[in-house]
Image (tube, rainbow, N blue to C red; front, side):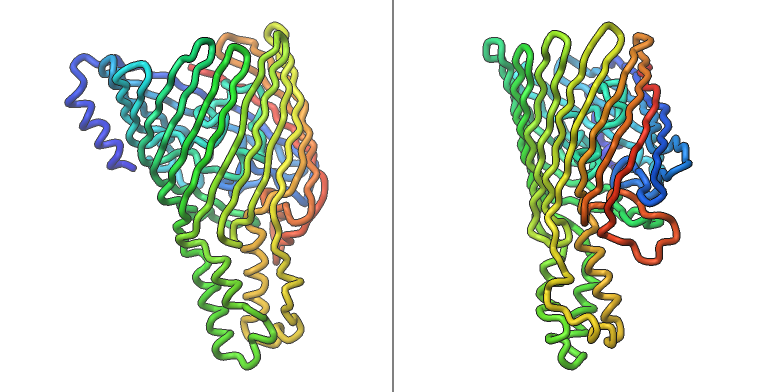
Length: 421
């Protein structure tokens, strides 16, 4: 991505005669506490840390960002945004959230090239800017599943006022990668998406907004190759292995990630009454690989506004499809006698449940805008974790083998101050 920044700066040297440069920023200082010694909270799937009972953690909800807006002309501007949010490896690539040049020849058309926000969510453009939304944190059931924040590529947006209605359509293409991990892994390997093609439609009226997003992508990952090779060798050299583990090679190939396709579809919107705002998002993930099971998720939030105070309540859910390896005909007593057999079985179970998230959350909270550019937020989440959906939550340190079927309840308290500068 450093090449992309260099390109933007190079282009700016040609187009900027007397540029106007605007510098702004945002940040959140927050603390998280919870009441479970079995389920460790983390902000999203890229986080390797966790918060357990007795902890007061600042890393999960604290960030600091800065943005440069360079106005070259009425048609051309450049945006660069960097953010620190406790990245595992802090460098230019991981800190750079936005870096694009935009060409807007008229009020209807806009063209962007570089690193743009990955348009998946209702809050895509400001998911890390805590001051921009009411809650103390965005709903994990939607925003925690996909930590991918940016797209390296380009997009074209067409917008058109139609009376009191404003319609816009955005087409985007590119690639990205972001760290993804589970089960208290010591590091978060990159999860790459290639050939990302998406369409985002938005309808804005006086009191309501509705958005429809659809994205198709191709996974670029060799993570499953060792398992495929291992099961292929066991099937070739262990007598009667096809009886002990029927269709083992077919299963491994079905779990492969590389060059497999996935889609993300969402419907979101908000309606503004005089004193109340309703916000909702519904999303569905579909893939053609067993390693990333289909996920359905969503939330509904109501916010009551009174002067500088906002009181809110939300309900959220996420439900994953589940492939039950235990009932697939494997003869476990015989597999235990095969060198490497039980290890392959355990690795397969982890892969199948690596990206599952089955839970329901009820949230209540309060936001106080005590200054023009500062707000205090307090939020309590109560989450019920259902069977096969606990990988969003980190297990206790020292677990020899992560249990993918943990169930339980967790209460998490968030308190933070968000600000603009």
